[in-house]
Length: 77
Image (cartoon, rainbow, N blue to C red; front, top):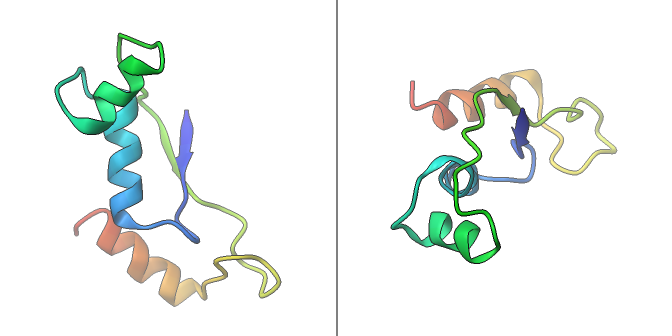
């Protein structure tokens, strides 16, 4: 299980993390994983969405409405 950064991250950075972790090879991010010493994909099955964004004191704070909008965009719904 791993979490993508939904607060200060982007849809692009989330996709790059999925590619780095789970794509077998032949792309920039999967090849970087291989270069970093992990030839086989991690095959992560459970992905969490960034948490702890409810407080205005936290980096990436989002209202519930804005969090839902960002999530819909991330999931391409």
